[in-house]
Image (cartoon, rainbow, N blue to C red):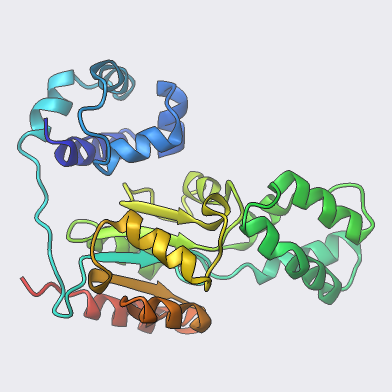
Length: 280
């Protein structure tokens, strides 16, 4: 059984069934990390009982999953500059930035937007580094605002909008290259973004979630972790990020980098697509 082929076949069957990775996990009784690893081919010879369970949830035969996977092996491409793996940032690259959340909180609780934003950024790095959970963050945020409770993740999800051009680009790129996420983000937010169809629900080859690895960009350590997870040489990695200060450390590590302009997402997406044209 070819694990890459199986993962791609499973992913297509899941998407055809209209299930997100999260809903698939709930129905099949799997952890999110296990399903994600199977879909990206990171688990060699997954349990036949697990595959049978997945097949049952998807209402397909075992042979449809396992048999067709033997024939399915996507061709790997390389760009003219030698890139095989692309890391995308999330905020400002796949979704428009969440500034509207600050305004909405200010309106709901009759406080100044400046006060809301000042409190948020005071604790943002800590929650993004996994030093405390979103629940703890909400408790601290509410206390600083002088209110009983706040649900930051709901404000966040309601505020962000998908950058359509980048979603189309990723759907195109994933059939040719290895695609991953490298983002400074609070724990659990990526799952919420996928569940709400705000970022593409694909089999990412690697997800470097700052809250899980305990370090944020532009700390050089996160690029070392990301390079290890990518499984390719530094010279074959491209980082697309909207924060300019996140690019030099990646470049110093030997990566290719591209700055993404959230205010001109159409042109930026075009430039990324142009850079990813296969050489072969």
